[in-house]
Length: 276
Image (cartoon, rainbow, N blue to C red; front, side, top):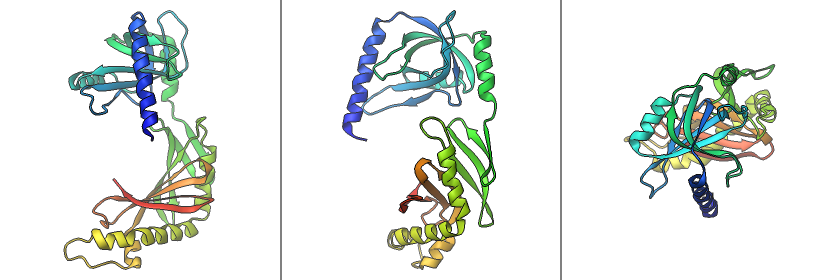
C-alpha cells in the first residue's frame, strides 16, 4: 500500500473530525455484527482508535437503515478495554454521538461519545435474530459449507487424498461465493495433480532456505523427498478468479511456521512462503 493511500486516509479522517465538531449530539441504536469493537494504533499515536461496525441502525423514532455504519472513538487503553467488555458481537447497542451520513470516505460514519442502556427495539431485534441464523451452501463436490460471518467466507471440511482437511471459500465484492466455489471444485476434482504440483513447488522454493538457515542442532540437510514427507496439508482457501492458497503444517521444518503455497488455476503456482 502506497504512502499516498495512507496520506489520503489521514486527510479524510481529519476532515471527518472537523465535520463531527459541527454536528449535534444525538442518540443512535444499532445492531452489532459478528465482530465486536476493535482497536487500532498507528505510531506515533498515543491513543487507540476504537472501531465498531453496525450492520443496521436507526435514529430513535426514525426508519431502520439496513446499511453499515462505521463508529469510531479515540480512547485510552483502559477505555478501549471497557468498551470491548461492554459491547459484544451480535448484540443491540445504543450510544450518544455525532452522525455524518455522507462522510469524506463516501459512507455513513459516527463518533461515539457515550454508551446508553440497551434499547427495546423490535425491528432491530428481528434483524439481529435473522443475522444469527446460519447461512449454508450444500455442494455435490465440496459438501456443506457454513458462512463464518466474522471473516465473511464459507468454511467446511473435505477429503483430500484420503485425509480430512479444512476448506474456506471466499466471497466476491458482492458477497457471492459462486466464483470461489468454482475454484475449490476445480482443485478437488484434480487433487492428485495439484497435490504433486504443490509439494514439488514448495520443496523447490523452500528446501534451500531450510538447509541454509533453518537446520536444528545436529540436524542434517534434507533431501527433497524428506522435505515433502514432513509437510502436512491443513487447509485450502479458494478465491474468485481461480486464485487459491494451500496451507501446511511444517512438520517442524521451520520450527512451527506454516507453509503457504499460492497460485491460480490459470497461472499455476506463483509463490511459496513461511508464515505465522
